[in-house]
Image (cartoon, rainbow, N blue to C red; front, side, top):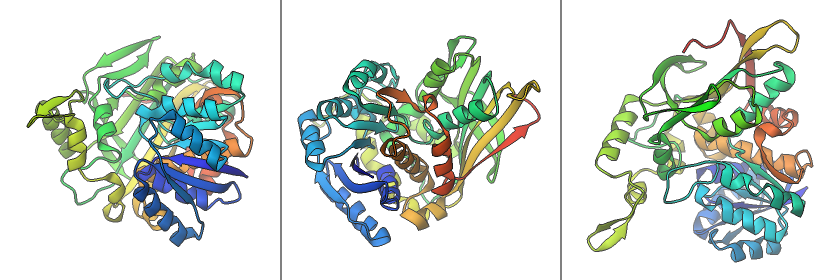
Length: 403
């Protein structure tokens, strides 16, 4: 149905490309490109072994717009799926505009030298993509991504309005590492240690990182401590659903993770500004990344489940007053590894990237401009979640959350 160029060769890309190959009627031609071609070749070999599908690989410096334009034209790609670093979002959007190619990513742009991720940089491309007749889909991972589609599905089928929403992300998985992040260590630590923001009463409320903790009983996992954090879907949801009075994001962390993260921050290892070491300039957090385990290599030893979803409260469509729904997915690390060779965190981001790209290639989400997931029709996306490894369920709760 369409030719696809995937940029980036990490754990998420590994999962996404395998799932694309399993849907060859939609993804008729796949090219995987990264700065390190050997990583692309390793994923391609795994895809061939597991699915029998041949994919092409290429070396690409994603910061060089001209090189990306040339590769888009060479491959005839109809959509570029950006699974590289969020620092590269804007240059890849520029390349798509120049080459006449649709665009999709899983995380919003942030400058490399400032730990601040906001959508305004990408939203500024709205007119450019509209005038070019091209579609750009932002944040087609799980959170952001599926969590936003969950909210839109609730608004379409259950609630006329959403008064408040809490997004809950629990990873109940474990491995043998003393300290390891679930995804790219550099991006993970920048995100976790950032100032907390949540939307309430028409404004952003701020608090220090890792200071608001709540225990919650997660389906299939049990009681876990979750911490209030800032996440980009709070910005887009509060913008596109202006009736929202409060929007919050929560993620679970074990005590050992919190201890390690705070120690690393206190000794300066999470700094993003250059320092001189032994006469050479280095960025501490990038050096730290080289020391920590690659999350993409942890699939074989990771056990347990992840549970991610929304708890939303609003006026019911049937006129019965205010109702609260909990909509979520449960994903098993070992099942993900058996299917595609990835742990659940990579899987829960890679599969929605595949499904989002499929929506474009199938024509469901072809609308010139730049769009967040909650702005698009949710139904076929939700159907594909059930069909391709991320089944969801929704339950009515007795009332709004009390935390």
